[in-house]
Image (tube, rainbow, N blue to C red; front, side, top):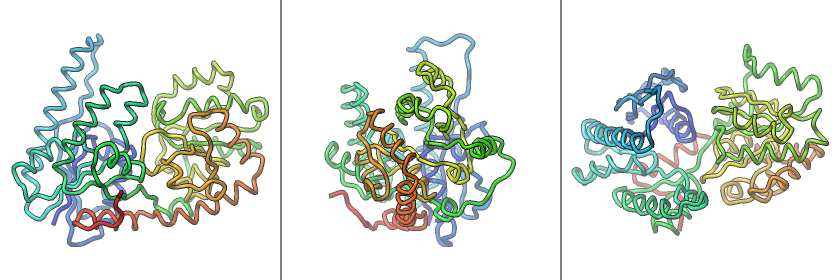
Length: 405
């Protein structure tokens, strides 16, 4: 049989939470002899981020190339919307054709997020009613849109999401918070299968050489500098500005002894400017996107997990597996993973003062930080990708381990 994954992002070139989950699921399932793996995704000119060469049971099916066209004159917003919608329609059409050509009786189609992925899958379901479709829901976008002040857009989004999920035989949510959103907002039941971690890689990382950014951190540590770090794409929803504000609160005490490191892709310009406006630009360290996150985490004293969105945080699990003390928002996104003063330090969400206090507590009490990190590392073993992939496979094949009810 085949398990066919459908994603709207160009894999393996693009890296993100969904792509990290996908890569590690197929890494484990590739060892199952009677399963063939197929990924349908857009083509891209970018270099691969994930190395697929070791996989023997995986094939890629390409849809349209992701547009990288740049215009000398910025197009008016209406024209940009038209161009974007035309590209989306083309992707939906090509993905539907790819599904029809690839999926056979007994195969399973796994859609990575309902919008837009469930649109071609719904077409497949309407024409092949016996085809099994599983939808993976990665967060609570409907609620996020409301929180961002877009109630009308949120209602429309949730209505479309609910409608499309009717064509899924099973729904997989990436955390209890996402499962609650689906059940309470959409009336959709789901099975929770969280993100995971390559436990041995993070608990016992191999040394890497020749990485100039890592060498820079190591040199600063030798001079007595301590590091507070987050692992996230540089976007406001990831809580980057709250971390910079926390640094401003702690500036007087730690300006010469602590650096705040941001490990993740994205343009740091706006955040450097914000740090400059608060007088803490010298405390910032932007490491950029890194493949060897496990090696970087070993150089960190305190980790911060303050991303918005939903589901079990992949970055937080990696921090736990690395044995690091974590300061995180006290909401379901993190409380489903961390217990205050046992495996982490939970602080009031969207509150930079509270975040600063949590960071200060762990910097000033290395013994407490060490205890929290050790406890977190022990718990992280439960999230090894081998266990996560096993739970996912049970859902894909028609079983169920944990329901949101």
